[in-house]
Length: 104
Image: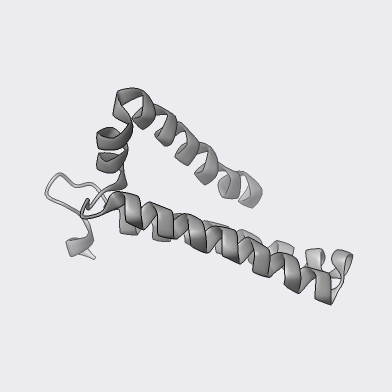
């Protein structure tokens, strides 16, 4: 795990994405059975597949945009400047805070 941290002691995009996914997967494990009960098995599977497609496409866009950048914050700074970087980090913090709030 030491190789995941760079020379400045920061985690890269891979570790950040993995931790975010881990939080969301944990939240989903507690919510999905209730959602399937409410919607029915066929509609639940269909909605889950649609959510998967949106998630998969978003991940592809992030990977395409990042290119050879190790950290996605570098990509935000290069592509969108300082304001885009700040907005991107605010969106990430909001996205990351949702599973934390749900756990507590």
